[in-house]
Amino acid sequence: MQFHKEREKILIIDFGSQVTKLIGRNIRELGVYSEIINIKDFLKIKEFHLIKGIIFSGGPSSVTSKNHQTVSKKIFEKNIPILGICYGLQLIAKLFGGKIKPSRSTREFGRAFLIKKKSSQLTKDFFKRKTTVWMSHEDAVIKLPKSFKTIASTSNSKLTIIENTKKKIYGVQFHPEVTHTKNGKQIFKNFIFSICKIKKNWNVSSQKLRLINEIRQEIKNDKVICALSGGVDSSVAALLINKAIKKNLICIMVDTGLMRKNEFKSSFDIFKKKYKLNVKLIDASKIFLKKLKGVANPEKKRKIIGKLFIKVFEKEAKKYKNIKYLAQGTLYPDIIESKSSTGSKTSKIKSHHNVGGLPKLMKLKLIEPLKEFFKDEVRILGKSLNLVNEINYKHPFPGPGLGIRIIGEITLEKIKILQEADNIYIKELLKNKLYYKIWQAYAALLPIKTVGVMGDARTYENICLLRAVTSNDGMTADYYNLPKKFLDRISNKIVNNVKGINRVVYDITSKPPSTIELE
Ligand code: XMP
Image (cartoon, rainbow, N blue to C red; front, side, top):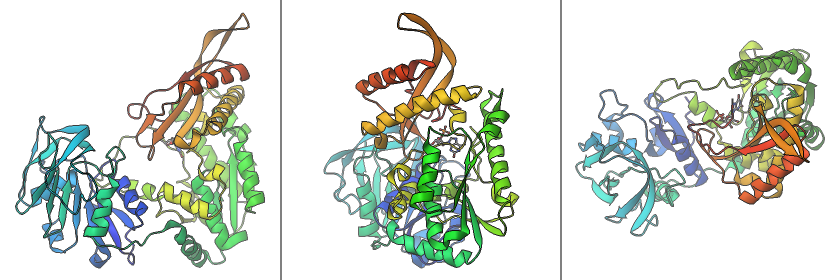
């Protein structure tokens, strides 16, 4: 259980909503420490004096079902302000004797219009008379619980915001944590500062020295090994550890040959020359290509790449004596996700490549300096560590790399073609100041050839697919609406400059139903 036993906080109880993490991030962005906990772990807490406010998240279950997740009514006697969101509101209403009904006529998905009925501390400066909020619910509260008042309504759910000021308990049916709710952050601001009266206590950059000291104290004179990918998480983790223990940190970069054009080598040079890391680059591209020969199945490719990565890393690490720790760039969301609130397993869509199997295999202790931070916070840390923008603000890149962006069998020729096209695409996005507006962008190579005409001659070549998505955490995503002029230019540039591509297509599907990567 991750519950900091000294820090005052706003505690979020996760009932399984897809967007609970956004509540945590919203609070931290306001300068207040927040933690997300599942209901089982919540029951183990004894240090209630540290909890200045509680938020019940949304969730997929229904309070009308027999086995719904709930809290003990005793929680309302602790004099801690509580805000329920969606399922959280319905749970509060139920526990206070209100009535909740699953009904076709009350369900709302997407945009809804909220109309004010009464002023409240919770909604101060949130809206004047009407506003747009984001909804996602089947059930609705149809009878107000005793001693509660209605603050606002929509046409489908009359009890959209409710409050019991005496007990400092509030509920909202919509999701203030998502960006589609206009000015949603104001709800959190009012709740934590005016109602919970917590003071600002969270500033990511000021955590840097604490982290460095903690790492130093833990590791002392032992040695740490780190698989450095050149992505923001492992880079920030390595820089922090390096500040703490210098030469006792050994970084290994395994080049699978499935990286973007020149990017890996350029990151290696930056780590070595600018940050003076003890870093070694292992060129394993030939072995990867050999093992992948003839393999077209996405899951098989993923498993081969993941296993081989661990093998190569382990072999290299064995050359160093007396290593006690393995450093990983695990983030706070990874920790929350590994403890699902419902305990239910989500269905496996893809086998993710990660270094999770390494510590046990190599009998190493884990050091995970970023495990209390969200991605945006890691970037703030990265900035305070002077990490170059090209690494700190880099788009996420999957462990199997171009291996899952070359659809079907991987060959050296296809890698080269894709690297060229992808390089042109990313460079143009940067040049046109689009790169940082996009969560992730890449080019992929489709396994079909089509006919084209160039210089009056027939061509029969590959299709390049371009993808660019907006997202908060990769769980859901929408395609980015690239300007037509940009698409025109990029299509021309790729076809004119990359031998082997005669057609460019742009992927306009969201996630779900698609995924961000193609394999
Ligand atoms: P999907 O394709 O599942 O991707 O929508 C969601 C996010 O995860 C990244 N991704 C991976 N990251 N190892 C990783 O470290 C992997 O095996 C892997 N597969 C997908 C993907 O790039 C996107 O950001």
